[in-house]
Image (cartoon, rainbow, N blue to C red; front, top):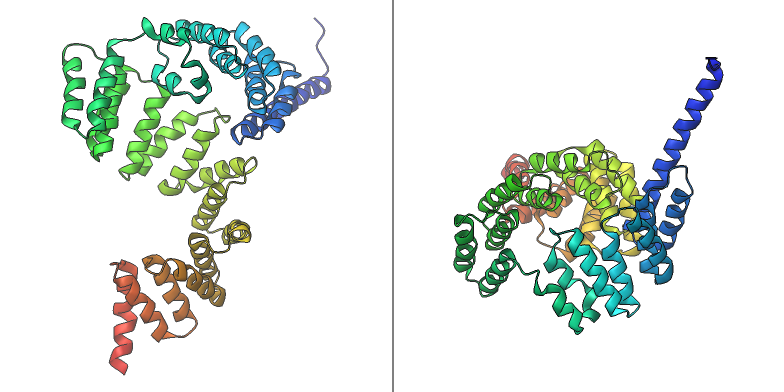
Length: 405
């Protein structure tokens, strides 16, 4: 067999690599625009993916979903039906939504039946509450759809919800635990028990129950995300970050997970990855929440120029936001731009006068500008909230200043 020349082989490899990179970028664009609700851009990007060398059925689903939100129901139906024919499990559920939007209740209910048959573990309660199916609720077929699908677990969930809505959590837990002790061990019951404990403010027990749920169903992403949420609320940022990092893995198209990892990365000190994640998110969304997060991450990294750019963007549109003014003032302080820091922090305090951290940094800015009296005044305001750095500053500087008088 004749060997290919080395240079030709290298060219082929380089072209394959570039094509792979191009597909990766297109996937990022497609799912990023879809997540950011920029449906026309998402439709275009999915279209390019479909024209690529290896069009996956998921791309037809993605383009169909974008078309659905644009109101292009016939085009959406064509794409999503193709995805369903190639084995995408969510296709029937989306087709049900499309038929409901087209006022074809019979077809919508038929598609829901197909979806539920193929997905016996589907979240029935979520489907019943889906606003896309509200128009079906008065149809006879809707009631018939659920007649034979009510399980023991559904009944227990309904009973527990009834008690919890009346703040009788003890009875709600008893209803669940009676079934668990009878041998009906199901992750949904443990997860429901966990949610009840969370509502009661008992996070350690909520975490314990979600661990039981995961022992029954360790790959369930919804359960993993619940555990991440509980750990974050408990201040266990490193453990929460580790879980969300594993969940993201190589799946860079799930933007909710990327956002969660960026938020936890800030809290857990995983700043490099957090900066990368928020940079990806900001390619597709200019939500003030995400711009602010980008500023916070840059600030903690010591990249004060980038932080200022983010805060300036926000303040251009919302100049009277106390949080934005505080964040920019603190950043100016770190760049030793003390006059601007003092100004921004004063503006923030006009809106949030008792915030201890703002008072502390305002005091530090005044101290840097040489006004010890004003510095001690703002430190005293921070001390009223037991803000430790202000107490330390005051002990060292303000007490000494008083003794000189």
